[in-house]
Length: 145
Image 1 (spheres, rainbow, N blue to C red):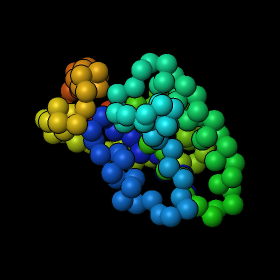
Image 2 (image 1 turned 30 degrees about the vertical axis):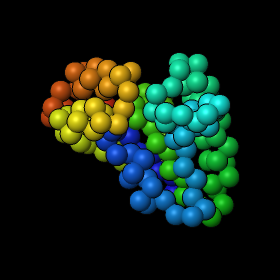
Image 3 (image 1 turned 90 degrees about the horizontal axis):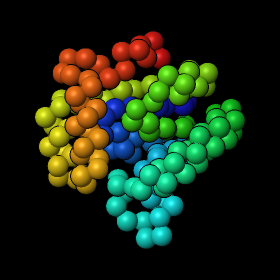
Image 4 (image 1 turned 60 degrees about the vertical axis):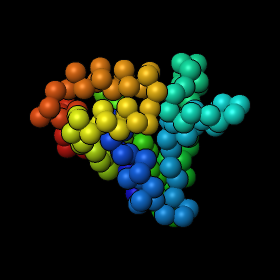
């Protein structure tokens, strides 16, 4: 099965996947890819823009290839994608992916971000939370995935 896990920064996407993925499964995570592209692998959540751009391209290449290989059914695929756009959602639909959105209250998200993220991610999260007030799903347009 192909699983796509979405949610705000600090919503627990990586933890959720790590608790469910089994040996032999494939996990595609932008943060893991970006960290692998750095010389020292430092700071797994704060990345320069050029690193993020390269990691995003590598993510789609990996997704494209692994979906083809997945046809064997020998493993599950776990894609962590915080904020998929409409094009991304359409692509995941074509793959027949199951989408899980992790919904965590805003206070908890900000508390986690203050403790575990740098200023760039904290500001990005605050901006996203302003765009999606309490009680409104981040992915209303994606119902039925």
